[in-house]
Length: 334
Image (cartoon, rainbow, N blue to C red):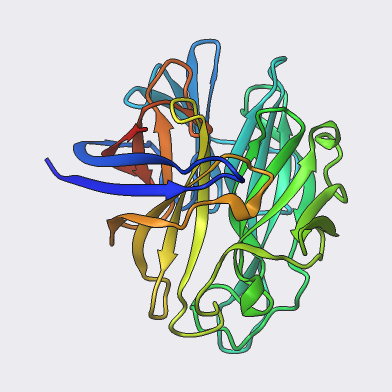
């Protein structure tokens, strides 16, 4: 058994310093039925766990728990205009309406390079995620593609994200990877959508910029909450990306897991990092990211082990998935 400990301390506004600790232990391998080249959102409905895995096209599976997932099938879309598509986040309403958000990659025509620029869209389902209606693209970068980018994949764009409704039920917060603009804008940035606008999201998402929610989701400027150290246009990129956020009911805090790419081309997976915050709406309130694992892959995600827990809500113990696989257990202590 391997035990890796990270002690993280943070101050929230004027409150005394509070601390939490996470222990990572190696466990028996578990895996999702589909290849996951993204976050893999989970929800429960009528006693069944529903999981979406994506590798250019989302698939849906269901079962009694993560080790008994079956009925694996591609989701049905009312339009395939925004494919390839990766479903990265979901939200289930009490009446069974299911919202989902997707990462979509658009080729940018850079001569001699197969670069694209991601954008973020939203879906809604009325049959528990078997089929979806596309509500359109809601988040795009404000800067043009940069064909000089040397990271091997993206020439800009907004993508690789997490979406979570705050505990007050007022806003959906988007923590997304911004690959565009000046270095000060690149990294993990934040936008939000009012809950009341969930059925008409296009044009109603606002990015955080200059301390205000004042930049439009479609084409607005971004401001990094967790900034890149070296630009995504450089061959030696050094940046955090691909966040997954859950509310931890044991800590009474939000927990962010993220990847770090450093410091060579072709997106090397340097490590998995963790950060804590008390308020989704305060992007500057996250503790400095601390490494918990090195060189294990992309797309870290916590999956709660308690009754009804998901990737969005977990307690003291959670499985750590990286892509499709989980070989680790996270245990949080105060």
